[in-house]
Image 1: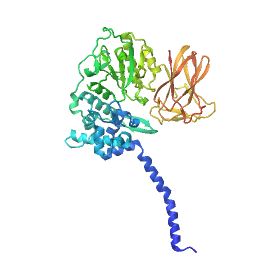
Image 2: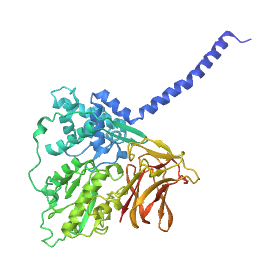
Image 3: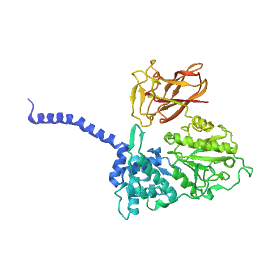
Image 4: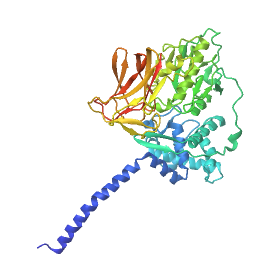
Length: 503
């Protein structure tokens, strides 16, 4: 016979064993929630009374919500919120003091980086509003401009305008399989003293550019090509930072660097900063500097999201205009990346820059090689079995949805039917959304000599046109491109959209 106290102990053990999984589950849920990027923004917003829209929009404007694993930007800024430590921007130092968190942690810890930015913004808001934190979203404009710490009021205004444009338009992006959403919020910002700041009155060389002069300490005055320095190259760069930040940096006499043009990611806006006749310091090689035009593109080399279609087209229009003006051959021996300059230590524009697409745009006289596009929703142009499910998961899809299927060693191809107008050589592109999809997705191209299979890495470069290759196609209306499930790669294979462009 069991003693009463042993029975009580057994009952407690049973109860504890029943309770334990629930407690552990709750703890795991809490840990999972604490690693959620959206939650980091919300928590920082509540803690420091900064609108979550402001935090999300600044993070998107600065880094597209990527932390870059502690690596610095061109302006020595770190993390999602670009906490910086340079002669004009000490937000990293300020955040460290306010949070009592060391700088190395702020550089690499996403949650602390966002908290640090929120703390700095709260302090700036009080300074700009006589000790009071603004209650209206519109009244945060001047604080956002101040947060940029850019070198002059004009670039600060552009920075704040970008942030509020993102708030008005709304943005979303999948980061580490989590969809981060900034819903569109209509707001007319109160610009305060920034309202009356206007562009400097000057005429750029390129008709579609606006003019903001770089510091005269950052380039060499010349008279090309009349002085014997023929312009032979266009060199493509990536800013490793924001558009407004690059412009501000080239205006700083201490920078000792410049480029002729800077192009914005979101809309392709072009700013010229050095006249074509003068020698910008951008290539790290005097011979190439003296013979080239440098074009900086907003973004980071390790994140393809910055290389938007509108940026490609804007840049290609500029490069075509420069080639025509100075007699530069439109080929890859004269239109080169910074990484191709002899002695270069830079890797830009990086592996995500689509040279085939870009050169196609440069060579096309209209600048609009849209070709023929077939989406999975194009009526009568897409066929797939019931094994191909429909998804709207990724916001970077082409159209309103896309198809996906599990990889399997079966003949189950999703086909795109295209009416090829004439036989000849065609560039073939594919679009897939951003997510961890199959790194070895088979695309079947029906060429004049039979089917050719190309394997594409759908775990990278989502949300843009990806060049599959150049193929000889027959004229006619037939299934030209297919996506197969027959692959050894892991992850869903995706059929979204394809495009062909006549060479």
